[in-house]
Amino acid sequence: MSNPSLAARLRAGERIFSAWSSIPDSQTVELVAGLNFGAVTLDMQHGGHHEDSVLRGIGAIRLNNKHPAVRIPVGRFDMASRALDLGAEAVIAPMVNSAGDARAFAAAMKYPPVGLRSWGPNFAMPRAGAPDAQGWLETANANTVAFAMIETRQALVALDDILDVDGIDGVLVGPSDFSIAWSNGATVNPALEDMMPAIATIAEKARASGKHAAIYVVDPGLVGRFYAMGYRLFAMGSEAAYMLQGAPAMLAAARASIET
Image 1: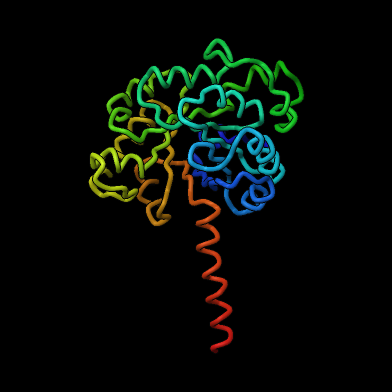
Image 2 (image 1 turned 180 degrees about the vertical axis):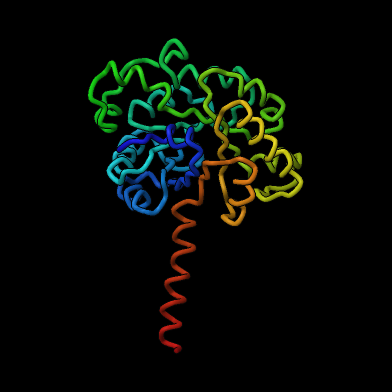
């Protein structure tokens, strides 16, 4: 991965679009990484990715000069460190509902004195083109992005405390889960209008604390609205969504060429 890092681009206020990968196959990841996204997120929580596919998938993402990110399973903070050692630039932790959750996540993400991350970037350093261990140690904390997911009412109540944790670099909203929590289980609607003021508050508080605001996007038409709220990283779609949207367009063009 050539400079600048994902962390540097976010600090500069750039908007970043991340593809979302659920299929644990390195060739599929390579195809997704070839699309016009700035980053690719490998999903271990609801997607099929596992440790081996993350190892191989990050390589495919790096070869396409895109930023690799990983969403770990709930509570698997050990996998956060593992994902970083395999070359991820960002890790997304789901269901961070308290300052205690955030501290455990940050401890796995950062080297001392910020956290307790163990040394062993045997894949990460060569994949990033890092020339020496000392330089890596001195810059890794700043160049790895810890996103705590905000997707419950508990997390919203604890948001200030979560953002206060040293080593948490930003928050990522999961709007589908958040809509379930917001409606007390009545609906799943990632565009639920009633929750939009709370979604805006999350971004406002994150940015006020000097941290990044990110969100998963189901409807691309909402990106402009989220951008105006202060979100700068947008995770979008999945392999299935890309195929479901691309194939009809191709078939429509083919049929239109026959009918005209």
